[in-house]
Each structure stands twice: as C-alpha cells, then as structure tokens.
Image (cartoon, rainbow, N blue to C red; front, side, top):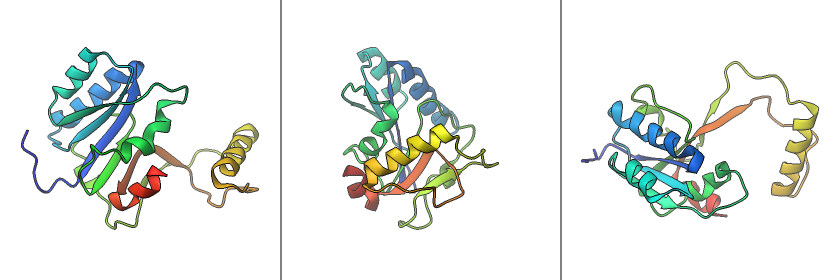
Length: 173
C-alpha cells in the first residue's frame, strides 16, 4: 500500500484473542473509508491465522505482547511507545472501535505539546463513592500522593488518544 507523505499518524490498538475480530474490524473500517495510516496491533495470545488476517489488510504491523493478568488496555503506553510506530503522531484506538468516515484530520494534534483526548458530551454523572475511592487509590499508587477530589470537572473517554512522539519517553516510564 502506498502511503501519502501527508500521513503523520500511526493508529495503535491491542487485544487478546477475544478482541482479535474487533482489531480486524477497526483496521478494515479505516481501509474502507480510505484511511491509509499505518496500523500497529498488539496481539496477546492470537493464533497465527488471526495475525495473518489482520496483516492482510495492508500496512498493518502485528506485535506480539506478553500474556498478562492485567486488562489489555493497560498496554496502551507500551504499544503507543513501541518501535513499530514510525510517525510523528500516534493514536490509540480501542480494539472495539470503528471509523465511520475518514477521520484523518482528527488524528493529528495542532501542537506537539498537546495530548488530544475526547471529552464526553454530555458529561456523565459524578463518580459514585466506590468509583471515587478506586480513583483516589489509583492516583496515590501512580503519583505517590492522594488527592481529596478531582481537580477537573471534566470526564474523558480514553478510547481514542492522540499524542506526539515527544511524549514517548514519558509513556515508556
């Protein structure tokens, strides 16, 4: 597949065997809408046949990722920072997502300092007390300091995230 020099973003996804068809449909939806972006798929426990089918869509690189008890979504930083990403920008797309049109213009940020994350619209209700407690523990575990409440009133959907490669060292930590 010939790639236009105007394409500056690689789309990255990952899934275990249960999400292999989702990853296939994600990449197929891009190709059906004329999106020629490189695609990198993290495959956890896929058969060789699953890998061949996804790669056959063209300009798709399948990267084996180790089995883990963690949710595959926890592989986002590793996959976005992997050596198979060669473009200036990288977009994580959940393996159960699809493109319903050519969304290329939204896969590049306007500034390398920004991280593009889709905000919910409308904003979902506030955290439940049990979700808020889990959030507090996660913040303390990852940041070393608990926060009494969220500093922002927004909620985001991390199904699609776009970053510039300058953030890759941060992701690799």
